[in-house]
Image 1 (cartoon, rainbow, N blue to C red):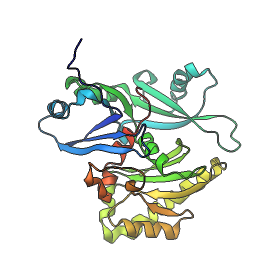
Image 2 (cartoon, rainbow, N blue to C red; image 1 turned 90 degrees about the vertical axis):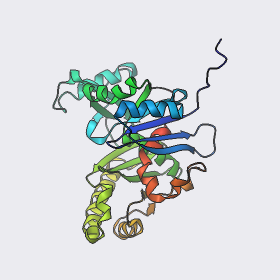
Image 3 (cartoon, rainbow, N blue to C red; image 1 turned 30 degrees about the vertical axis):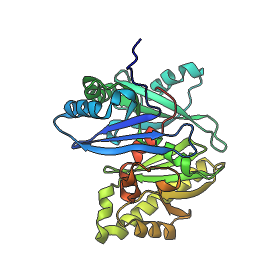
Length: 308
């Protein structure tokens, strides 16, 4: 018997690789009235990806965590499809073949996952969200973790990471629109009762908001895209009433939210994680922009279940 074996830590630890750094987040949600962020840090790379991960594995004792990572938007495609009329055990395989005419590379070279979408008003067929990732993309993502002896249990996508956070913000019995922005693009998710109904990617990045001189043009474009998305959601899911849209913080965030509030049909609020989560050991998250930077990894760390 090994009396010195370290006990595993509860919850999930999310690691995401960037060109110059590694971001990590560990959140404990189960058994707590409010999720608590226990770790949320960025570490500059020292050497290549493998060397950096080996160093972090030793310094942070990563062997004790259930680890996952998050795909970047450019690495996958998401489709809304009719649910195949097959038993539940065969849905994933059937969804895979439903995508063969929607992607421009051989279906045999792709990994596919699919999740159900709650029925919309008057929809004739149940819907699913299907995610397609090239096998070579997954192999390249997993390789440095394997070489650093860090076992990834799951790989997630930004839409579902954002869904996890949105659930904390939902009003009971109502839907929520959450607008998140990162260094590459923006993600708009529609959720209710913890379920992801719909999502949309908007081609605007966090850096775009730093140019105050071009703010009005940017705000107008984003407001138009948001309102179109709200109208489409309302037509498809008349049984779900949206309570409001929550917007992550951006440079000149109060100005941005004020513009949206004056031009959208839904109430608009700035995201404040402190209203729904605790992070006493991570004071940096009191900074609204730091919350935006960590939105995906915190959401991914709130993943339910033990494996995928």
